[in-house]
Amino acid sequence: MNKVNLKQLAKELNLSVSTVSRALRDSWEISTPTKQRVFDLAKKMNFQPNPYASSLRKHRSRTIAVVIPEVANNFFALAIKGIETIAREKGYHVLIYLTNEDGSEEMSVAANLQSGRVDGVILSMSGETGDVRHLMELQQRNIPLVFFDRVCDSIEAPKVVTNDYESGFVATEHLIKAGCQRIAHLTISMGLSISHKRMKGYTDALLRYDKPYEDTMIVHCEGSDEENFLKIRDLLASDQRPDGIFASVEMLAVQVYHACRELGLEIPRDVKVLGFSNLVTASLLSPALTTIAQPAYEMGKEAATILFRRLEKKYILTPDHRVILPARLEVRSSTL
Image 1 (cartoon, one colour):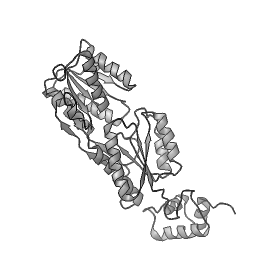
Image 2 (cartoon, one colour):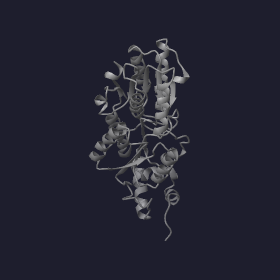
Image 3 (cartoon, one colour):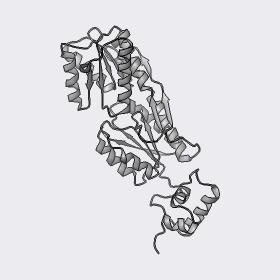
């Protein structure tokens, strides 16, 4: 007996293929009577959507995927904890995938997830991602996608972010008020939304307080840790050394400490340092690091909550639903 497909079901029911497909996914868009007609005929014709289907009503692996660029950053470790908290409450497993800031690796992970092994995906983009067709294909295969922190504004999907522009402005403003005249900004891939927004906050704060914008004070740290360290060391060893540094991610703030130690510079006397960071050891550094602390755990919980709302179809979310959770400035000795 030939395997029954969606087209055959749709023809028998005099419905469109898309309607039958949504009905089999128990979508809120389809009326209950229509769903029942589809379920009944699918059962009668022994229709099986894929090998992972546990029933005709619900296709559930009870597993979600979390795709992140790295784990060395304490932000992502805390976000995963928040995601797992919600997943455990729902009786779901969590699979963690690392892209290592590699766009091709992110594409490979997305292709792997299209098989139906997970019910939904929570993702923070890699720094090298350019073409986003692999993420659009996840949605086309009806796999719910939620972005957090590093989001793709060109894809209509729920997003959980922090107030990156305001935080970039506040960070720069704090350094200016601490007496800094020449402030450097260490940034990662400008292909990321967070980089653009933090940079815009930085430049707007300079403008607001009549401080000069200098191209030499923008350091793009997109290479290896060793390459980034050399860039930071060269900046601090130059004749036009900054007296303040705003690091957009925590690993760069830590490397500033290493470079200052190697060059014999004292923080905060010679250079004041502030970084986006969720390091629990920030207060234990010598001197303690002033940080913009993101609500990483809460962002993870919120992203997971939104994903399960989509899976359970209890709420109708707009295509570009966005949640913004505020970060906070924690002043410590590195800028005093």
